[in-house]
Amino acid sequence: MNVIEPDKKIELLGCTVDEIRRIVIDLGEKPYRARQLYDAIYRRRITDLDSMTDLPKPFRHTLAERAVVTSTRIENLFFSSDGTRRFLLRLGDGREVEAVFMPEERRDTICISSQVGCPLACDFCMTGVIGLKRNMTACEIVSQVVIVLNQVYGAGAQPPHGTNIVMMGMGEPLLNYDNVMKAIRLSADEAGLAISPRRVTLSTAGIVPRIYDLASEEIRPRLAISLTAPTDELRDRLFPINRKYPLVELIEACRAYPLDERERLTFEYVMLDRVNDGDRHARELVNLLAGLKAKVNLIPHNPAPELPYLSSPMERILAFQGVLVVAGVPAFIRRPRGQDISAACGQLAARHKATA
Ligand code: SAH
Image (tube, rainbow, N blue to C red; front, side, top):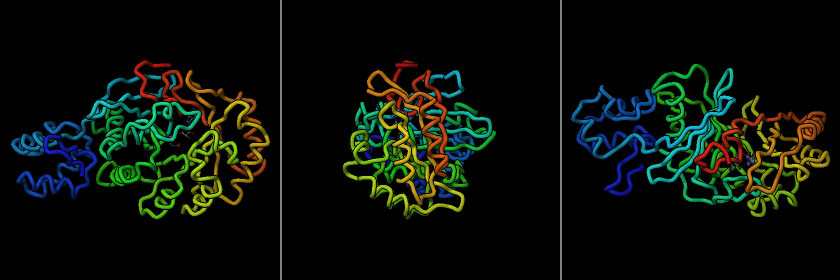
């Protein structure tokens, strides 16, 4: 539950229906109001208590003294020429995070954050430069989805096609496990946002024990691993966390992750010019992934002045992809989205201007 200090308002978006019921009863209302409130928040995506006109006015007033739907607000919005929108969001305590909306012809993808900043300090990622400020609450995680959908389609309007969620924004989701799982479960509820966990992809830099935890969850997202290096020697350099959880352990955990029949694990591989992009690296990657149901997403590196890397040239990325595909490993080149507004992978640093 998000009730902490008596002087702080409860954030309802992020509460389960049972938690909402307790609040409702606490305020002296009939328990059935909880379902109504839940429906207004999650299915109709109403973020302002006063607009919930199916609830009695006096109840709305007492509720408003104790609770808000969410205290997250859009601080700024940036539009890319490719249709991507970057949301700079201000949380209740004034901290800022980002979410990114990426439209496609047949589906939309919302990229959301799980932590304010990130403690992992991967050498090629901007979020690592900020360091970790704090974990996000379940409310703050779910609010991103609601706020983005409402901004894009209007409050409560049904999106015209499926919505995919990728937990690839700021932060390492598996270091904020409980809140992330609660947010995934809430989003999955058919009576609420109804975003199937099959449409949710959680990306991790490789927090091995939490991958096992995730594997035993009933409601389980798709798993993506930010690999980016096929050997410990190189990965130790790019991902400090690799020194704690080396590749053998990471791959073993991946092997144990349960997959649906047609599901594959995704391995993200950021293409860093002359660092990890040789044919030799591609062959090492093929060996590393041998026997796994895997696909590889090759991500051109998104540069930033603070980062000491450049993207591999496209012809190198194509050659690298060729080595994988010939060896039977499906490999795709991810088209960078929203680069012109600092919205692309690894560029999320809560910037107030469109670009660095
Ligand atoms: N901590 C999680 C989620 C955030 S990173 C993780 O590591 O997976 C999301 C994706 O962005 C990862 O695949 C990461 O490798 C990629 N990424 C990070 N910095 C990047 C950059 N500068 N350019 C391109 N992709 C980057």
